[in-house]
Figure 1 (tube, rainbow, N blue to C red):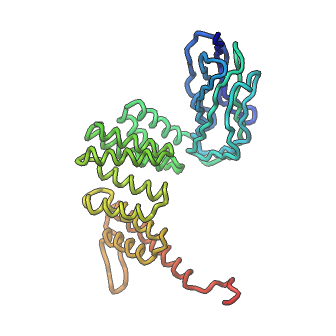
Figure 2: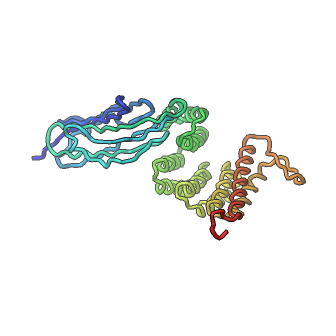
Figure 3: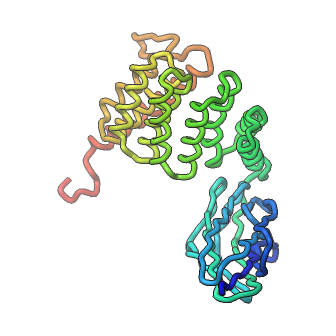
Length: 352
């Protein structure tokens, strides 16, 4: 005879005496798995609160992932994560240690239900954390998660509007970069539609956001192969090089792919960004002269007035040119400072 058991798992997030979210597990037979919507308190959001694993065979193993998100501006060092309760031995988890959730960070905690006996099985996942107070409120970060919810539901117009509201709030967490990548895609979708090319590119961005850069690159390659006339081809080629540079630190490969983007799509809106990224890549490779040449080229692209006699330059009178002119100057100054430091003798050198 097969013995079955049903679970109810409760997640508790504890800040001092405040309970943030609850998860539970109970046993029985014949009920469907159910879950209670997300709850948010003080910038911490738990993806599942009370969760039921459903009816399972004794000796089986049923995994479930719980995501703890910092949606505020404060920092939350996690003190302990522990499975407690009468049937805690029926739940298995690799508990992470030394985790600090900065604004925009997420922590995935996997908990597997592996019942040792029949009947009701109840346990809790207790997350105890401290709070390091930041500046401002968590309203801005809440906007990001609202926009993401709109995106996941397919309401791209509302998602675009909310992502833009979030970016206009002067947000400064990791979510800012995520929103900056998603917003142009969703705005273009409102003009060009959401075909299979859109689906591939959006999936690639989602995979990268999840940390699966291999899958992201595979989806990007599929888009370029299958939709070589898509409005998203230059976006995809830029994102490929961006992943190689930022996520994989393969600066030479990233440099080469940024160059291909410029060669194949000279009218792309990514040309300036690609050129700037090439300068950063050469800097990382230790090629200061090549990096300097690239930043000078970018600066010249956006120079409106130039007085060679006095070695003075001013950018064109528009926001984009002022942006790239200033960013190029910053990098050129950094290269000059590094070159001076490399040329000067080391004061700590005993032979100097």
